[in-house]
Image 1 (cartoon, rainbow, N blue to C red):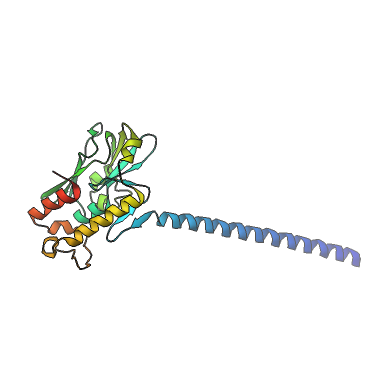
Image 2 (cartoon, rainbow, N blue to C red; image 1 turned 180 degrees about the vertical axis):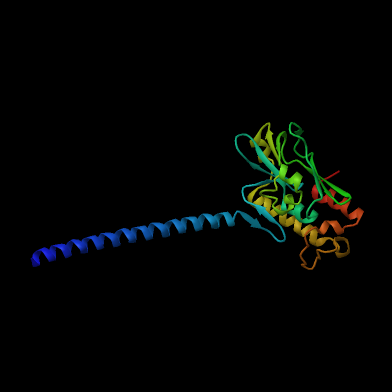
Length: 228
């Protein structure tokens, strides 16, 4: 009788030990999943590198006229404007984008931002055929400035030679160095001319380009955006 009891208790102990072992394994597996997800989330949060005042997205390719291109599916690239353009104009009142089927050329006018009564033509970073236009930014132009590297993309273009088009652009450390040079050029502008971004280290407010006078606006379009 006692032997049966001990045998039964021993079996119960084995069941409890097995249950605890399974629980330990489950907890460790769940913890490892959380660590993996946290690491992935952290990687996503680090997907944008910052230079003074403005941000760049890792893996993107930048044109000196402040447009960007990023490889998309197949032989297509996604195109948009960078954070400098977004901060200078602020929320654009309208966007003039080329129609699907239009041929754009690298370094030539690709689209136009409209800010009040002023227009800012921007250069296409790649050469090819426009295969898609972002309808969201046409309905809500401010999206292009609120999320310039994400939902605020402008065009999708099929380049004649994607590799060659992207190779001609700036990326990584070169892009960061170029943006830092842009910041230094802004800092050297006279305070009265720049208005809200002071050379002594003040930070420009969103839409700081709108306070520029007509001559200063034209100069900024020419010097920073390479517009004619």
